[in-house]
Image (cartoon, rainbow, N blue to C red):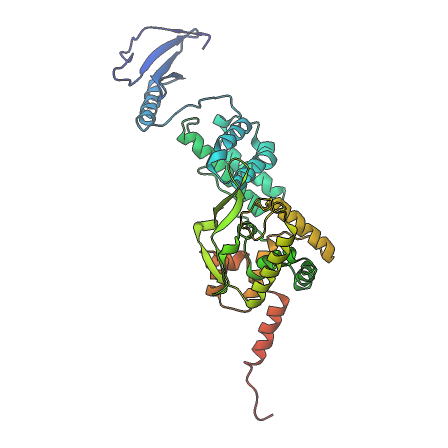
Length: 390
């Protein structure tokens, strides 16, 4: 305080031993007395704070000692750093620790949702109430449940790391309540459209095989791109799914384990094997001899790993050629399991999908269709008792 002078330790509460901190009385020009508490934090930096009452100063020292004894920081390393600056720094330092797809999702969320809303606020001063107000604004702007979940997850991870590493003294996201908005999953492709897509795909052996694997077996796009020819057992007519193609931390394409690490083997029909072998024969004729050979079922033009962006772009061309509306490549998987659910039981469906939770499979990948609902109501006709006297 500019209008205060520090007097001696008249109360006997001056510097204490063993790092317990100090309390000094401060005499203001107005004649009032304040109490300045001082203590070294976990980083060895001297911290001070003024109080009206000596008891308040003592309580503050006790809290500082407790935090220090538990290895907790009580001050921000950079007290002027904004939320936006911290998050951008955090995501770049986090890049090598997560999958490239996760890094891209976090970075996009920070850029498009978080920073426009709270990016200019001081990170050390961000409150739980401010975060909840921010969530409320997102809801008012009709943000989707999936995006809101990503915002919350990004903030939780980022501020959790800040506290763990000692950059911030507390995590304001810890007690923040996220609005309960359910994600609306994308639905399967309607029968009249996926049939047109399949018929158009049959004109090219590569595309035919690609759509067969996605639409009839339901592999994830990354799993499709990770298939190798030796994953097919022609004798037992099975396909083993044990890897996927994703971008790694360096941004280059690489083989990774399948989601949840669950290698699975699914049966193939004779028709499916013939579709794959036809594609293999035609592809062998078209690829140059000097290209890369990674033995991939669906390689790029030189035999290496196919980029999922290229895979999606080719799917968009197929949709246009088939004369159907725009769909996401991932909807092939949902279409596959929605159709398969009408042919088999849930446990078999789960084995094809690779999902450990039936609730996830049934809640996000299997949907009732007009045909299945008509069959259900028609089947109820067979249960209706008949009056034999009629």
